[in-house]
Length: 142
Length: 142
Length: 79
Length: 79
Image 1 (spheres, rainbow over the protein chains, first blue to last red):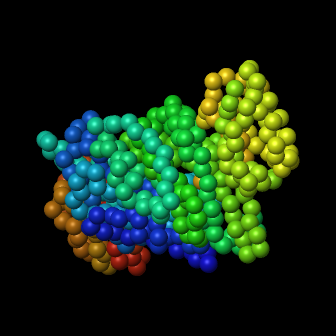
Image 2: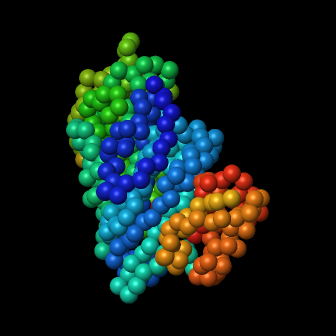
Image 3: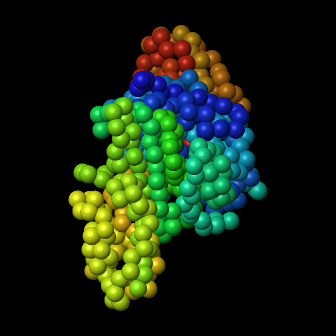
């Protein structure tokens, strides 16, 4: 009834959130919190034309599993799906979707926030921004 | 580009989240945080068969507008859609969906959480739980 | 003066009414309306509820003034 | 001993390689592999990156042991 499953997936196609919400939830869950990271039209004071994402999937899976484990210990999280895009993304497209299902909403909000915050710190995925006048891998030269 | 719109809607049909996410977002937003409240199969130690929701829509709209204003002052929230079901709901159906779009994710998580927490305190909507052996309007006799 | 009173959820079920009209003296307050409702609907006596006047929360001391709609608001349980 | 080294993002672009094989002495560490990489790819010299050995973060002092895959991990920017 309250099955446990946390999973990271990569896709080169547009992310549809609704199927993830269906998939992540079990009948004992009263809350589904989700996060979509979306490509903005500007960043670092520049107008963004498009993004490219690159990942190291087997390591990303290992690192994400550590984060799921953290969220389980801290918030009791048992059910979460994380989908990350790779390849070229246009403005307005989702680069990442996180859906978590929990019996009560407090844990859901905390866990979802934790997963995206930590994903940005440790999971091996890289973003290259292309502007009108060039491009840059983010974080590299800061 | 960064239009401002916060809205509460009622519906007697199943809530589809994906169109709300599309609608709420503008091109300057990097984060879309959403919350679904879902009918659980148990509550207060009893097995739930179904729920009925009743609302007082014109007052709900006034009260929700006060909450949107709170979230705007505290978190800079400009774009949010709240959809609440009325009538009979089965296990697993969403009773409420909240979608907020913000330039950065911290404000999105905070604002979404604030809206659902405060909605449950002040917006005139009522839930009746029906169990195997009776039913009760929630909150009434506590 | 006349005012419409709305009853919701358990209050609607207890009274069998979702909307009643009250006729009250000029300068009447929410509390005066409540007293009249309690006379007509003894089932309301042991109930908990707040008041809303024209869609804003109000107290027993609030004057009805030119308000058109008084609502008894049982503890809310949306979400 | 042989080990595969993976290069990502800006490091891949700077070196023109996404995967190289290194031949190192027994008991070699991540730091030894790094020294060899810097000889072959001077473009790596002014870059910032972490190390991962078989998908776990590692340091220059970590022994390669029986690991099969070393990766240079530039600052991540997913999400």
